[in-house]
Length: 308
Ligand SMILES: NC(=O)C1=CN([C@@H]2O[C@H](COP(=O)(O)OP(=O)(O)OC[C@H]3O[C@@H](n4cnc5c(N)ncnc54)[C@H](O)[C@@H]3O)[C@@H](O)[C@H]2O)C=CC1
Ligand SMILES: O=C([O-])CC(=O)C(=O)O
Image 1 (cartoon, protein in one colour):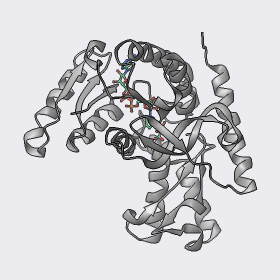
Image 2 (tube, rainbow, N blue to C red; image 1 turned 90 degrees about the horizontal axis):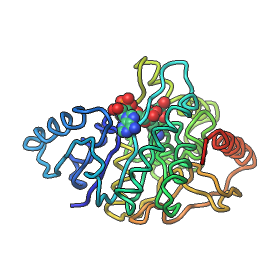
Image 3 (cartoon, rainbow, N blue to C red; image 1 turned 45 degrees about the vertical axis):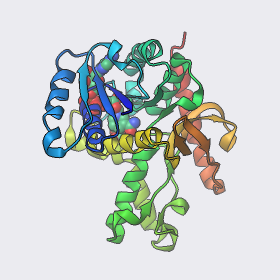
């Protein structure tokens, strides 16, 4: 069994552990700073195993010794936003959490592939990579995966067709400047630009961009977790099984799309080594302009980080 650790046993972390256990992706460790919560949730999940028929072992802990030997570590520790907040408003509070968590990962699981989920996603992934001091390909973020599954959902709702035939692509930052790409969003290989008019596509694009906020508005005191947990599971599975699936990931750019030294959402091949390749898509001039805005926005958040 592979060993998968999830740091943060809150809504996103615990739901991701549940999904990964049900798929028997490995033995799971769930770590949180709050005493009792990870232990109680782990026991509750273990007691579901005879009925759901999984042999994954789940341990809840507050002790970083227990993450030793992890193949993958997912970071979901952090504060979620509330209505009226931008993800960016979490920068300061979650920076301190990321620094603490990554210092411990460096000490206890230096060989893991690390997937960052904590918001604001792009600068937190950058910060994690600086603290972790690992090869850049082994540290990446989950954001575009979620935005793409939302886009796919809205396309299926609009067309009244099965979600199974849809493959969507969203790149850029995981915030209001993300970039859903209609020409690379397909239904059984057919670009949606062939299936819907421009206004309809724009409505689906706008709903995707506001996808996180739409859920926050319903919940009032937290943010989405079922689709985020599904997105985490999809990414971890590609690492654990070395499937080399191509999906949106917040990856370190070294010249791709014309940017260097920044993390941003791009299509990437995900395998045992983490980000094993980045696909440099052909974009329209308008899309290039929007991607620049998105990346400049990430860079401005990175400048606010207190890196020592
Ligand atoms: N990248 C993405 O697409 C998404 C990102 N998020 C982000 O994920 C984060 C977690 O969201 P939820 O699970 O809904 O929040 P939550 O409040 O339910 O859980 C967060 C957990 O982190 C724990 N925690 C805080 N500081 C910690 C530390 N230093 N070490 C270990 N654990 C610590 C808390 O005790 C809590 O159990 C938020 O920052 C949220 O914005 C959420 C959804 C999607
Ligand atoms: O909206 C939020 O704050 C959480 C998140 O990143 C998402 O659901 O896309």
